[in-house]
Image 1 (spheres, one colour):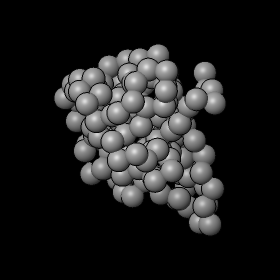
Image 2 (tube, helix red, strand yellow):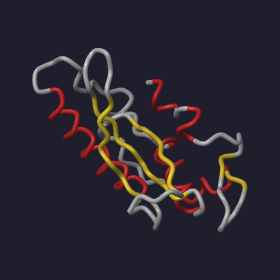
Image 3 (cartoon, one colour):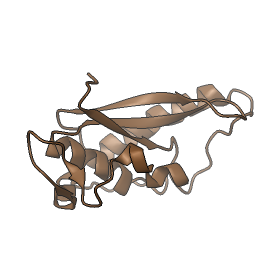
Length: 138
């Protein structure tokens, strides 16, 4: 469930080194949705099931050249586990569809300050969606 304590990180629907569906090509929106679901499954395979306070969603974005989809990782900003998992989704974003090496998302806790019961923010002090994510720039 998404609440007012949730923030999000937008991720690509395909790994960095893979070609994904492009805006304007035939059946692109269906392909992008399929890619987003596949990416969600791949992230779960790499990182394990998300902790409480994390959910995934396929998000439609409007653009001058046409709509496209991204995979959103929603996370509870008051939960260090939820923030760590979301940061790991971005930091361990797959290079290829075969990038299935397991990663312990808990090591991302060391990148944060704050604690339970208050907003947990990455060390640079920026919320992921306020500054944009690295995945946005791919």
